[in-house]
Length: 335
Image (cartoon, rainbow, N blue to C red; front, side, top):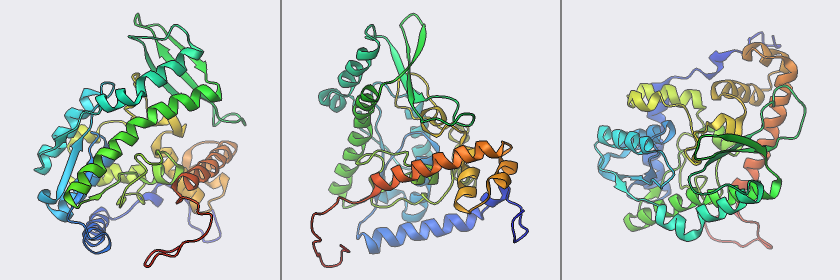
């Protein structure tokens, strides 16, 4: 218990969802029309909870006729994601635009570059194999530097998991990031043609902890739910009437060919626990008090806090503007 005698618990994440939705909708209208001087918004719909909430709020704020929703599958994305995306668009009264990005990804060498890097570690990796990368387990229980592993599955279903050397990890991620960057390029192509703004969909976990690609899903003209924790996004979806099929879907990267959760790829904790941990961290809650709320040991909270600190540094680095050698004064723009 802290000096103010208020015990930290999960109620710290409680908000008035009707009021929050109204505030976001009013902000979208003002930002698009006044700050950005655009006629509407474009956003990519993934079939996940974040883009579903953003699309719903945008339609409520601007009307279906001023919201363009893009479905951007590629040969390795889940058909179920596209199905859920279509379901959302149908409910919102928006006809989605389909942009299959397999061809540009192939031309840019996304799949070839990634597979070549994996073969340096696993020479037999080839056609018909599946793969995913993820954080090594044990963040809560050991003081160690985080590292990544790769799990591959042969065509006959045999899996193996191997620690990734830094160079292989970087090459695989660089190639895979083309998926987010090509999607964002497509969003801006539509936005430019319509004089629309691009709406980004990160929630607070993604925004604050750097779970996005610079020049990819981290790029947008406005990000209406970046202040909402993932738990709050799910609750907002229920308030807005987002289809249950989408609300019941666990968070996933939908980037690698083996099923992969966001937890195993980046966060190392389930989103509901990490929401509470991040809230506690940002509120200056002591480790022992946060431990009671999270149901883990204070030493484990200390490791989570350390990981949050490191990830926030990553986020700050990839969010910052380009560094100038000398300041350039442009009217209306801060140096």
